[in-house]
Length: 200
Ligand SMILES: C[S@@+](CC[C@H](N)C(=O)[O-])C[C@H]1O[C@@H](n2cnc3c(N)ncnc32)[C@H](O)[C@@H]1O
Image (spheres, rainbow, N blue to C red):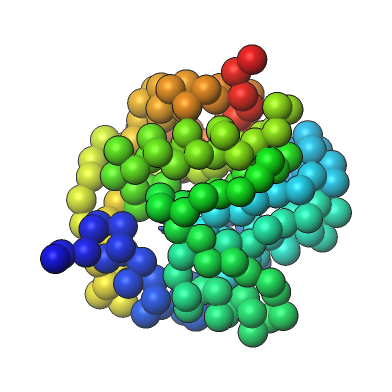
């Protein structure tokens, strides 16, 4: 049987984890969102889905939050363990997220999930949050879905979504944005970073 688009994408990450870690070290691409979370939820207990190399978890821990680092890609888990970090293997689509957490963070991850899987993951995130919990997430903006070849030649399945579509998916899961930031001024491209809370 063919692997799912998400599983095939994870196979690609297995090949390039060390290179990705080198390229993203010190990047702080979405540090506005991390800062916002730190200010909103000081000392929070956080689940991070798709930690990758763990640079964002480092920033949150340096600010006094505690982070359950997780990823599905074994090469990222091994990379972080080689840095002395504790990391759990967690497939956001198929595994139980545990909780409750004060916050769930998933940055640059959900673009690798098909629409049905996105709905499943967002519902699990909402269920894993404490009543005053927050969800920090980033997505690439656009209106396209398909395969993209990375610089290394490995294929990545990527879904681009509009802010309206993503906000509607959040609403279906019982989440509403309270803060948003775009990586550029264009509403159709670039990255959207968003802090959401549960609808009461
Ligand atoms: C572009 S990297 C982002 C890594 C890190 N969050 C960052 O911002 O640098 C995408 C991440 O999504 C993770 N990922 C993809 N599918 C996943 C799934 N089903 N469950 C958990 N993590 C997943 C990959 O293993 C990888 O770490």
